Image 1: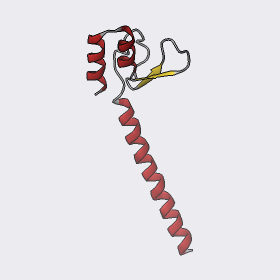
Image 2: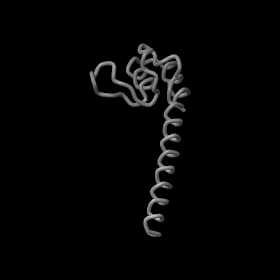
Image 3: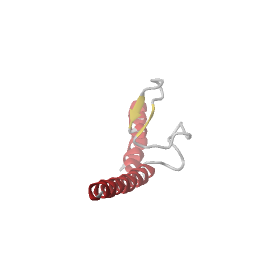
Length: 85
């Protein structure tokens, strides 16, 4: 009986810990969203990863910076670094 209560209490604590961790992760992820969206792709808002412009379902990491680099857009690179940092 006591063993069951101990196990039950431990499982309950683990669930609470997971809930807290999930809320922290979700909150952190929201900080990577750009309200106005990415340049040339306003419907994508995540500044760390987004579907690539030219690679179909593949993804670009740091899409603002990567796309500006590909276009030789220095001010876009600087903006991407500022937004991502």
